[in-house]
Image (cartoon, rainbow, N blue to C red; front, side, top):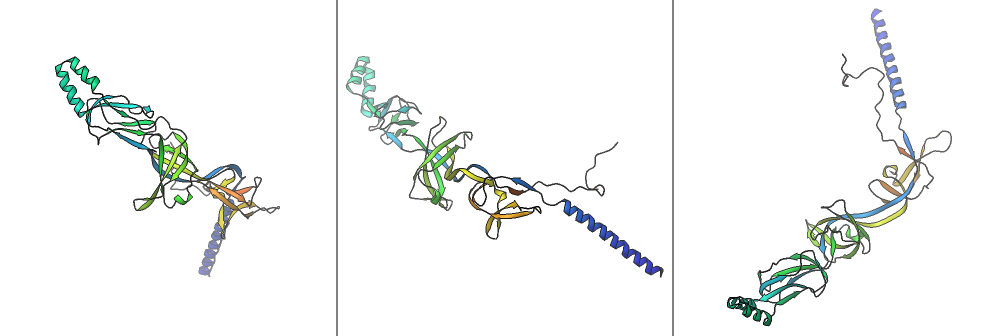
Length: 320
């Protein structure tokens, strides 16, 4: 009899403990229900773009060589200087003239002056308007007809390298934003002017060159600089926008969560049609309006309150 009473007491104790535990778990689950933040759509700008890399290059790069071999007597321009078509860049003496003048110099100034006037120098002339981006010679230097003396550029552009998977989205006339790796604070607007017809292979990927014409050429632009380019494929300046995490996918449709009407409250899902999206925003084309209220799950994490004592693994503040 005593043994039976002990068994009944143990069973009763287990039932009481299970009941108390269940009540505490139920109360904890109820108090830790998911909370929602109410937000409204906002009007703003959103765009879809193709981001890639490229380089600053001259649109037309012209090497200038001498028509005769000989000695450079004068260099009349500096690197970076803007010149017009017909500007004299340098004066040369042909090999024969240089030899004759050197011989006349030994005979005196009058003899040298005579041959200097009779046997004229050869001028190196700019064939177009542009900027001197390379100067390869100095006075006294001997050159041949195969040597490049100067390099002229009409104006600098940015050549973007677009992957074949993105080239179908790029069209001439699209806007672009240009940045330089060397000067990340500088941003220059530009326009896509030309898409090359032939690709080239880079790391086993077909790449197409795309010419982007800057609206302005900052002083710091230099030929060969690495650039990053964002080509704007689509843009909407008055789009109805929601945070990207407000739109969910349910049963193959895109939906947003809203409050149910009536006293009971609760949530309901509204089907929406979406458009452009970027890293944090998405465009809503239909389904809700500017005055709609959308529920956004509260992603903030709150530790549950511990009313049953202290956690032995929690660091405690030392007491004196």
